[in-house]
Length: 551
Image 1 (spheres, one colour):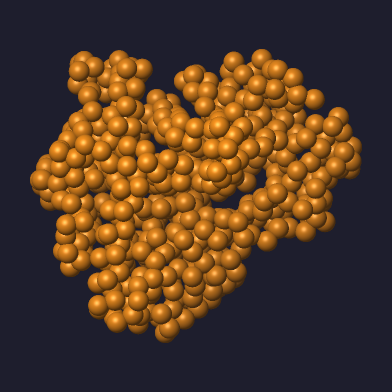
Image 2: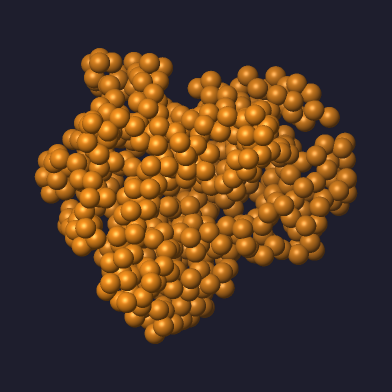
């Protein structure tokens, strides 16, 4: 039975929960600091390339991946353009599914990487998010029995045999406790841990061979992607760590008085390494805009709260949900957003947090040197790179370039020049920035779904001013700036980041999408002219943000 709980003072939990969370009294939480430390200490060993990884798994991986590449080379490569990329993406996705949970999980990370990976690759791997075959009930029952230390019916009155969702590491079942409390139980696949370690050894061996082979792989930084993947997937193998992530995010939002979110309560006792029982919440699918509007929910407010909450957690506490996508959240009838699946949680060191803070403040006030310095400190450029050399090489202080006014050949030439310059500068996408950008791309898509007519310039200015008012003194002190006057949104610079001049007063997301469509059409038209075949998918996207004044 749900009753009003006192733990809402310390965490963004539901008002009427089935039990109360007392962080200091959770027995499953004891010793988790040492568990995290041990996992962190083990990462270098897991991600260090060996002379040869486990032979049998290497052979299996090379067979499926090599077959995918070979068939693509023979059949789709000659088509060129996005058709070739789409063909390769499809074959890699099929190979990942045949290789099992670890590669499917890697595919799920790629699927959330809009703006980081080619759009054809992202679209193809989104099939990995919802199409993972579940374990049979007999396997699930065996894991539950082992984790409970006794018969299932001693704890649960019932467990639905058909899962609510099945992912690469685990699957989720609706259940009812013996006292009648409805819950959700997450159960780990039984053989996944051993497979993950073998697959990480294979990936760590392969990743260095991809560096510099193609521009996209070089900028995406395959070794860093493997390191990020290893860090996240090893934590996901211990559900006690996920439960603690839930508590830490819930308490961080409460500290910020960010009450637009709800985190389900983990059960006080029913949390083990391979089983996680949590509060059951229900709401609107994130894409159900009509349903939300019919219920009187302000979808623009939902998006606005999502942007502010994500940025506040990153900038001020260095912690954030690391895998935002539509399957990991829904909107409650109250209009609050329920966050799910905390297996991937971003945790920044203090140095990285300050670098990200400097990057975002610099982006809002048009300080290009501080942005490049922050990117260097985050690991996007070598430690010894000269900041002014980066600015000059990329033309970051030049006039804005509107990509919709360029020809297809000019767009391609500009993209190739930028990529070549970044590679020459030693640019890489560090793992912390990869997670952050991945979430920004999700929020960009959320605006397109929930608030397409939101004025982006007005929102950016309002959010920047909110941060300056609410947290300005604290942020200025942490960055060593003298006065709050040092931080004011530079709207001319922000508009230049979109390829627009200062005279542009408004830009809705719908208008931004139309601009992106113009750019994609130019790439597709160029591809049709070159190979005589209709283009598939989309070309490189013009994204908001400000790598500089050139797009």
